[in-house]
Image (cartoon, rainbow, N blue to C red; front, side, top):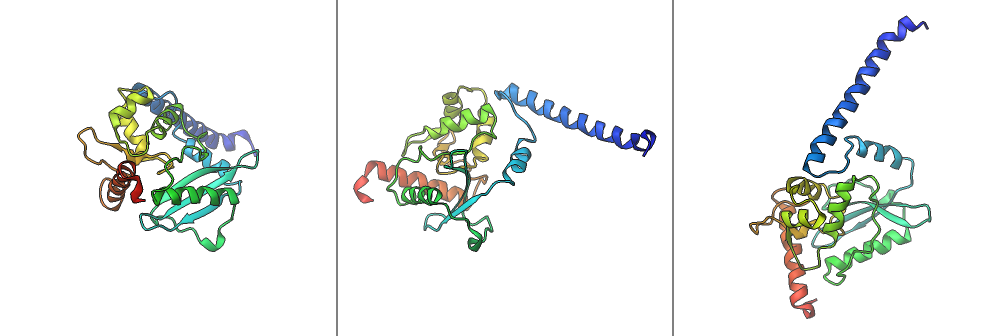
Length: 227
């Protein structure tokens, strides 16, 4: 095939590449203005492309407070790191196709203990964080440090992470948190004391669950003998 025949396709591909680069640069500049250190619009897509070639293990917790689904992969040392946590029954994973891993089952037991009001510390659970931007990791790390039974506002969390002027961007990171309960975004509320959203929703079952988790933790902290 001659160059003349394929030249239109090459030009189209080049224009598309330039558009992608321009969009990424636009998003990067916008979020740097809000406090981000780096951001790629397509980081989630590249993460998916990498993950699809890995064996992903799955566990499900059925609990009266909320059902929890866990996914994890092995790192280079053969240890499990959690890649995703979902609440409720939003996923349709077939339990018959579950790939069992002893370490992931142990993590599931810790989370069940938390929902039972018995496990207060989930900070040792390993999470896969390499696909996040520096800004996102800073916010998630700060959120993970919020003590059991305590709440902070979104502006408090922004200051804790070192980005006091990026409150909206911080709220966005909490809204898209891939590790609820383990990274306790339910402990982040509005400055006026209202609950705020949870698990990507602003009302309904998700917010009721947030309220229930906060009240459970405060009761456990103040009256430990009740559990």
